[in-house]
Image (cartoon, rainbow, N blue to C red; front, top):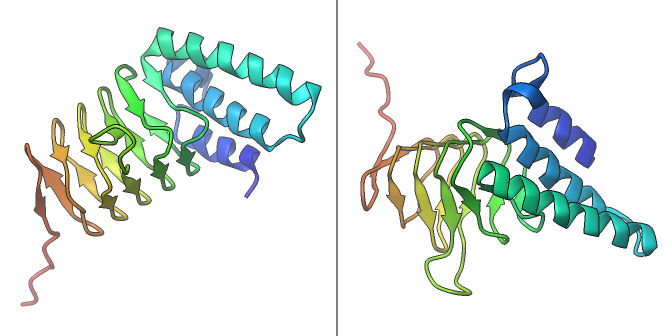
Length: 175
């Protein structure tokens, strides 16, 4: 899938009119997608110049918004960040399609050079949620605000608390 299509899917999840003036978080998403496009270019002087531009933009937007989305992380299309500030993603993290992050979210390792989470599609992180270590967060999960997730979360489940406990979805009762 083209990186431009990823960007188009990101835009769909933001307000339709002038999102760059209404949502500072989109700046970080754009710089992330730009960095991924730069890395896809053929080696040469143009790529080197674009890489310098990327790092300048990355540091500027990271400082201004408090969102760190390194270009080496693998983030699927449709990323939505609500309420920018204090969002840190480890460079080795994988995040699926249509995920939502809120302020204060950290997704990273527990120890230096340790494993990092793999996040499925349609995952919704509440404010100040933390996912740390070599865990897998399944598709369609919800991570509650201020939760500390240190274990795997199965598809469709909700994780809440410190440390997080898993609440499995309930099946409808047939009458």
